[in-house]
Structure formats: C-alpha cells, structure tokens
Image (cartoon, rainbow, N blue to C red):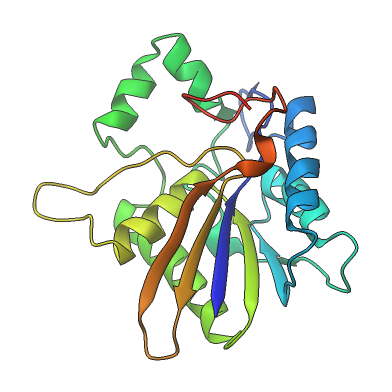
Length: 208
C-alpha cells in the first residue's frame, strides 16, 4: 500500500496561561491547505486520517473534499505538544533566535510524555493504519514530530549517537510504500510542488 504522511498547514501563534493552545490555521495556512487539496484531487485515496488537533483537522478538510470519505481522527498521531498551553511556529523561534529553537536542534525533549512513549504511540498508530489498508492509498494529516519519528525509524537514522532530525515543510507530503511483509520504502520526502509559485511560506528555508 501507499501511505501519504502530510504535515499540517501554517497555524497561528497562541500562548495561554492555562489549557491547551491547540491553534487553528492562519490565513496563509488555509491557502496552503486549499492548494494541497487541489494537488491531490486527481489521486485516488481509500481513506483520510488526521490528528484531532485543529491545525491537522483543518488541513485534512480540502484533502477529503469531493471524495466519498469521512475524515477519521486518531489521537495516536497527535503531536507531542498537544497539551501545551503555547504554540509558536518554529519559523518564529528561529527568526527570533529563541533558545527553544536551539533546544530543538540539540534534541532537547520538552513534553509530558517521554520520547520513547511518543515514538511508540505514533509509530504504532501509523502501522495500525497501514495494516488496515492493504493494497490501498491512504493519507494521514499529522505533524512534523510524528513524521520525523516515523521516517527516522524506517530510515534507521537512530543510533548510539542520538536520533536523526529533518524538517517537514507545511503541507509537505511524504510517501511511503508499505508491503504486507513489513518492508517500508520511502518514495518521496518533503513533496511541496503545490506551493511552488504561490508566494506562501513553505517552512524554514523556502518560500512558495
């Protein structure tokens, strides 16, 4: 089967005194999601899954639009910050030289659940989705941390020196070929053709 792991579009910044921030998409994020939906419209999808967090839910809507599909939400592909009271887009952290950006580069883990539990939860959920769609094509709209955890695992980028790290752009598509025998092959990484020429932000280093 073919698995499409898709990062959500650009969300707004939100910082609360208490409670989960769970931000919605920014205006540019809605535009990114619309282009994503148009780009994938010609591809058959057997199912569309999404994290229950707002930025993933809203990004998934244009992906499922025009198809006889209901978006299926999975808590297992929610981001590690799902209970955090603040959300600052990583691009802002980098631009402002925020110490939290350097912490990310250094692999500092700042979440309620351990990194091991996060990996087990997200990778396990993705594998359950794969097992339920033999021979199909499925989209999972989720988060950068989730995509990073799964690709690091199948690309074997984790060793005694620490885990690997790469940055998924907004609405980027990461295609994985998954066989029933357990083989996992990465077909594309950071596929963002739909944002080219749009003028919309893509991520840390590129503009559409």
